[in-house]
Length: 231
Image 1 (tube, rainbow, N blue to C red):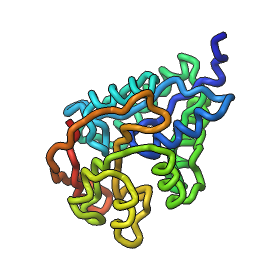
Image 2 (image 1 turned 60 degrees about the vertical axis):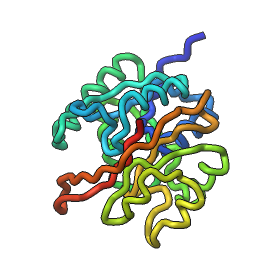
Image 3 (image 1 turned 180 degrees about the vertical axis):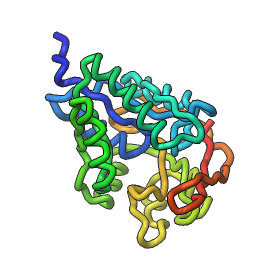
Image 4 (image 1 turned 90 degrees about the vertical axis):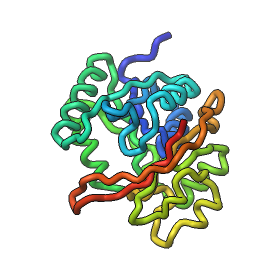
């Protein structure tokens, strides 16, 4: 029997560890059904926004999860207004197709949480935050202990050395993080690509490529990032 529309949810999907843990948490529930992964993508280079992961890898990731993925194309560069217009268009389409919930992997950034709630409320849709309020240290160690595997794909250059990009997210990585770094990278210190774990039917295979340095304009000036390309 088909589930009623009010249970349909999309998961805001970056491809990283927090998204994977949010999905893992939601799959244990019975009332809300994750039926789509929603991912923003740089339309110029066909890579996932902020993370820099290739579109093809995200498609293979979605296949391994057995959940369809939908990409929201964004221009490069992308203003806040352009981002909000693109997201509102995508959310309107989901609303028309019976989606009522959006699931997000945020942990403790209150400003971002409230922004998402306002964005969804405009369309009479609801937010779910399955990881909200969890301790970052406990969460990332649960991620590792439960068999998830992820590779770090980008790091903020002002916080982490380039050598952190391309490393596996394991105990060794956590032990090497500088003091004050959130172990889940919740403040944007690093981003990851999850390629295996209990929510996957099979691993997503890739090859680690070269590291590339890029700068992006921010509210406090240019911010540098090291990216590790996954092939």
